[in-house]
Amino acid sequence: MCGIVGYIGSKEIKHELIEGLRELEYRGYDSAGIAVMQHGNIQAFKAVGKLNNLEEKTRNFETSGPGIGIGHTRWATHGKPTELNAHPHMGQYSYVVHNGIIENYREIKSMLEGEGVHFLSQTDTEVIVHLFEKEAADAEDAEALFKAFKHTIEQLDGAYAVLLITQKAPETIFFARKGSPMIIGRNSEGEIYFASSDAPLIGKAEEVAYMEDGVIGYATPDAIHAEPDHLEFVPLSGDKLSAQKGGFRFFMEKEIYEQYQVMSDTMIGRVLDEDVAFEELSNDFLEGIERIKICACGTSYHAALTSSYLFERQARMPVNVEIASEFRYKEPLLNPDTLFIVISQSGETADTLEALRMAKEAGLKTLAICNVDNSSIVRMADTSILTRAGIEKGVASTKAFATQTMVLWMLSLFFAKRRGSVDAKTVATETSFMHQVPRVLKEALDVHEKCKRLSKRYLHGHGFFFIGRDIFYPLALEGALKLKEISYLHAEGYPAGEMKHGPIALADAELFTVALMPKTILYDKTKSNVEELSARDSTILSISPEMFELADDFILTHPHAHPMLEFFEMMVVEQLLAMEIAIRLGNDVDMPRNLAKSVTVE
Ligand code: M6R
Image (cartoon, rainbow, N blue to C red):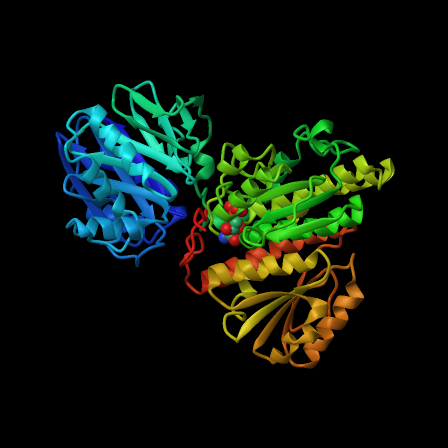
């Protein structure tokens, strides 16, 4: 949801900013812009659309020697994706970039307009730079300018990560953070970097500080000043190469293909020979926990829903799963014997973060299952289990979902063992199945060619139903979400047994049914539901280890002895199918329209 970068140093500033933005482009790509200051002059460039357009526009712009700069890649919230609405936004002598939403911007804007300020954009962000210039009207020295910046930030309601530069302080970047992530990095060459995630800093900064909410400060080539507390710098490690496409057409494809490898990381130290363990969960922490509530959004919600079957079946614990954006406003009843779990790939999803905050305020014990260490959600939760999927860049979540689901399967067994609802033999059998997951994820890739061929047929029609029962119902929801977000085709996930209660009215040859038909769970029941659809002429694509005579097309999966192994294989099939359909339609699979990787607005 927008990405911001900043740079202080002597390298080619445009290059540093654009390289940083490239790493953040997945967060939004409606427009991009940079502002560079050297020798007291600021030059700004903006372009609508992807970063390539900005690169093209700045082709002949170069800098040499020390300077500073800020940059932004936008996911539009207020105002259309036009050049005027692109960041950086300018005042008379200052420029600002912002990630988040200023909730009271209308009030501030009308106050400023009343004083004669002229606004160029429809964004909420522009108020920041004008407000700053009003506050800084008489400020000349660094101290007075910082005071003006602080007064500006104090007047903002909402979420923000802000970088501001002004000709009045030609070597300074002012920064503030509340609710939207911001990281500052530095190295021994005296360079300072800012970014919305640590990806742009890998290979550039030697140490980084993950700013806490409420941090405000400024950086110059000589010093970094932050309030209310000093920034805590920690070494930054990471392998830049692992975030590149590595020969695949899209990050999504690469991420589907690396699922079997990252899954081993997810399991290390947790799935043992005949046991499961989580060093993140102490006995003290779990004392008194009798039920679980899980909040998440999108794909992470589907992982949560899957786990509700596992927890109840294995651990015999009541589990309640909620979409975070709904949970926030329903005045939920929260019981102290509840473990509140949030699931998030990014750890920055605003709705999930807010749900977590509410649970903490209610005094519940909280656990984050998250892919990004040091993210806001990880830092807020009492404890966290990292999914270890590595950087996920494709907007369509794949390996994050796989690893979340795996952690939840392990966790349900962990609770089952703890509560005595399963015996040691069952724990050993379950772990032996868990050990097979990486292999299953690898073998599942065998159907890629078949998905490519099938994608020719599944491009038109009036929609898709993904259907399944039990844990294959959340998987059906996930298959439909994958397809719609990257192909823009209408798709719905439905419990197979529920079709007869209405949706079957849509059935005809133009309705594509993707039927998840595992052999290990409710096969005959699902088969009957698919037969009902087939009898009404729906075009059926069955995904099953068994040939289904009424299917128009089929993808044969490997036979497995455990539903979760069938689950993981069918998950890969859904991902590949959605990706191949989207590629055939000519879509940008990694950056689908209207979306952003990390949703930091409500
Ligand atoms: O980072 P999070 O897991 O909290 O994100 C939640 C959703 O925004 C995310 O899963 C979204 O639905 C994906 N684009 C799905 O592929």
